Image (cartoon, rainbow, N blue to C red):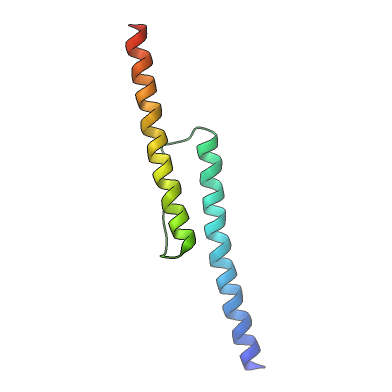
Length: 79
């Protein structure tokens, strides 16, 4: 019974941490899709989901730079 209780506790702890990371990535993807590029994505851990969070953050930075360059170019053309 004790082993089953411990196994359940560890499984629920793992599930909670996993679901929080997935939720964070999902929220970041929605913000990026809506054009919000000024909110950094916090990366937690060293696992595959943390690597995915890092990739999303790098994508956000590149997109923000591209948008800035396009806006600057458009302003120069309109002058």
